[in-house]
Image 1 (cartoon, protein in one colour):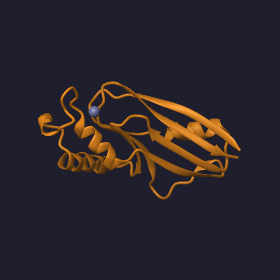
Image 2: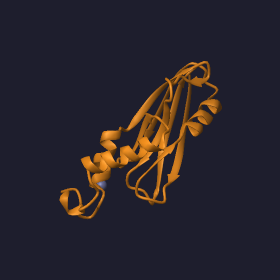
Image 3: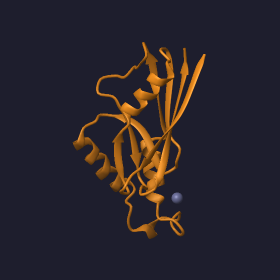
Image 4: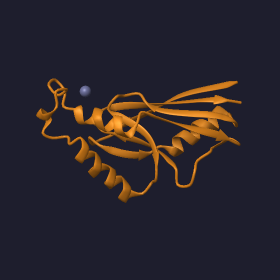
Length: 138
Ligand code: ZN
Protein backbone atom coordinates (compact mmCIF):
# COMPACT_ATOMS: atom_id res chain seq x y z
CA UNK A 1 0.00 0.00 0.00
CA UNK A 2 1.21 3.50 -0.85
CA UNK A 3 0.78 6.48 1.44
CA UNK A 4 1.01 10.20 0.61
CA UNK A 5 0.90 13.24 2.91
CA UNK A 6 0.82 16.93 2.01
CA UNK A 7 -0.11 20.19 3.72
CA UNK A 8 -1.87 22.98 1.84
CA UNK A 9 -1.37 26.46 3.31
CA UNK A 10 -3.80 29.36 3.17
CA UNK A 11 -3.54 33.01 4.22
CA UNK A 12 -7.05 34.40 3.81
CA UNK A 13 -7.12 38.21 3.92
CA UNK A 14 -10.59 38.43 5.44
CA UNK A 15 -12.32 36.80 8.38
CA UNK A 16 -14.54 34.45 6.38
CA UNK A 17 -14.19 32.93 2.92
CA UNK A 18 -14.84 29.73 0.99
CA UNK A 19 -12.19 28.51 -1.45
CA UNK A 20 -12.53 25.67 -3.94
CA UNK A 21 -9.43 23.54 -3.23
CA UNK A 22 -10.34 20.71 -5.62
CA UNK A 23 -7.50 21.56 -8.06
CA UNK A 24 -4.89 21.42 -5.26
CA UNK A 25 -6.26 18.08 -4.01
CA UNK A 26 -6.24 16.69 -7.56
CA UNK A 27 -2.59 17.80 -7.87
CA UNK A 28 -1.81 15.89 -4.65
CA UNK A 29 -3.55 12.80 -6.00
CA UNK A 30 -1.54 13.02 -9.25
CA UNK A 31 1.71 13.39 -7.28
CA UNK A 32 0.83 10.40 -5.08
CA UNK A 33 0.56 8.09 -8.07
CA UNK A 34 -2.28 6.30 -6.26
CA UNK A 35 -5.01 4.93 -8.56
CA UNK A 36 -7.31 3.10 -6.11
CA UNK A 37 -7.79 4.13 -2.50
CA UNK A 38 -9.06 6.89 -0.21
CA UNK A 39 -8.26 10.59 0.03
CA UNK A 40 -8.74 12.38 3.36
CA UNK A 41 -8.75 16.18 3.43
CA UNK A 42 -9.05 17.90 6.83
CA UNK A 43 -8.65 21.35 8.29
CA UNK A 44 -5.81 21.44 10.84
CA UNK A 45 -7.43 24.28 12.78
CA UNK A 46 -10.53 24.40 14.98
CA UNK A 47 -11.90 27.56 13.35
CA UNK A 48 -11.84 26.33 9.73
CA UNK A 49 -13.68 23.63 7.79
CA UNK A 50 -13.26 21.32 4.84
CA UNK A 51 -16.53 20.33 3.20
CA UNK A 52 -17.96 19.17 -0.11
CA UNK A 53 -20.67 21.06 -1.93
CA UNK A 54 -21.55 22.96 -5.10
CA UNK A 55 -19.25 25.68 -6.49
CA UNK A 56 -22.09 28.19 -6.88
CA UNK A 57 -21.69 31.74 -5.58
CA UNK A 58 -25.36 32.13 -4.57
CA UNK A 59 -25.11 29.04 -2.40
CA UNK A 60 -21.95 30.37 -0.78
CA UNK A 61 -23.75 33.61 0.10
CA UNK A 62 -26.59 31.47 1.50
CA UNK A 63 -24.08 29.60 3.69
CA UNK A 64 -22.74 32.92 5.00
CA UNK A 65 -26.22 34.23 5.87
CA UNK A 66 -27.30 30.91 7.40
CA UNK A 67 -24.16 30.58 9.52
CA UNK A 68 -24.49 34.17 10.72
CA UNK A 69 -28.07 33.40 11.83
CA UNK A 70 -26.96 30.30 13.73
CA UNK A 71 -23.76 31.75 15.23
CA UNK A 72 -23.52 35.51 14.65
CA UNK A 73 -20.00 36.91 14.96
CA UNK A 74 -21.13 39.99 16.92
CA UNK A 75 -21.56 41.01 19.60
CA UNK A 76 -18.42 39.19 20.68
CA UNK A 77 -19.56 39.49 24.32
CA UNK A 78 -22.45 37.02 23.75
CA UNK A 79 -20.03 34.07 23.96
CA UNK A 80 -18.32 32.67 27.05
CA UNK A 81 -15.34 31.58 24.90
CA UNK A 82 -14.60 35.20 24.01
CA UNK A 83 -12.35 36.95 26.44
CA UNK A 84 -8.79 36.79 25.25
CA UNK A 85 -10.22 35.67 21.89
CA UNK A 86 -13.08 36.87 19.69
CA UNK A 87 -13.58 33.73 17.62
CA UNK A 88 -16.29 31.73 19.39
CA UNK A 89 -18.53 32.09 16.33
CA UNK A 90 -15.75 30.61 14.16
CA UNK A 91 -15.54 27.48 16.36
CA UNK A 92 -19.33 27.04 16.11
CA UNK A 93 -19.41 27.63 12.34
CA UNK A 94 -16.59 25.15 11.83
CA UNK A 95 -18.46 22.51 13.81
CA UNK A 96 -21.54 22.90 11.61
CA UNK A 97 -19.59 22.86 8.33
CA UNK A 98 -17.37 19.95 9.35
CA UNK A 99 -13.72 19.14 9.89
CA UNK A 100 -12.94 16.81 6.98
CA UNK A 101 -14.01 14.95 3.89
CA UNK A 102 -13.06 11.51 2.57
CA UNK A 103 -13.27 10.96 -1.19
CA UNK A 104 -12.91 7.60 -2.93
CA UNK A 105 -10.08 7.37 -5.45
CA UNK A 106 -10.98 5.33 -8.54
CA UNK A 107 -8.93 5.06 -11.70
CA UNK A 108 -6.54 7.75 -10.43
CA UNK A 109 -9.37 10.32 -10.07
CA UNK A 110 -11.43 11.73 -7.19
CA UNK A 111 -14.66 9.71 -7.50
CA UNK A 112 -17.16 12.59 -7.07
CA UNK A 113 -20.91 12.66 -7.49
CA UNK A 114 -22.42 15.32 -9.76
CA UNK A 115 -21.26 18.88 -8.92
CA UNK A 116 -19.25 17.79 -5.87
CA UNK A 117 -16.26 20.02 -5.16
CA UNK A 118 -14.01 20.30 -2.08
CA UNK A 119 -13.95 23.61 -0.20
CA UNK A 120 -11.82 25.17 2.50
CA UNK A 121 -14.08 27.24 4.77
CA UNK A 122 -12.28 29.95 6.71
CA UNK A 123 -14.13 31.44 9.69
CA UNK A 124 -11.31 33.27 11.50
CA UNK A 125 -8.87 34.38 8.82
CA UNK A 126 -6.12 36.97 8.45
CA UNK A 127 -3.45 34.43 9.46
CA UNK A 128 -1.74 31.39 7.97
CA UNK A 129 -3.60 28.10 8.34
CA UNK A 130 -3.31 24.68 6.76
CA UNK A 131 -5.17 21.68 5.47
CA UNK A 132 -3.90 18.10 5.57
CA UNK A 133 -4.22 15.83 2.54
CA UNK A 134 -3.62 12.13 3.22
CA UNK A 135 -4.04 9.58 0.47
CA UNK A 136 -3.70 5.83 0.91
CA UNK A 137 -4.08 3.03 -1.61
CA UNK A 138 -2.39 1.30 -4.51
ZN1 ZN B 1 -11.03 30.30 20.08
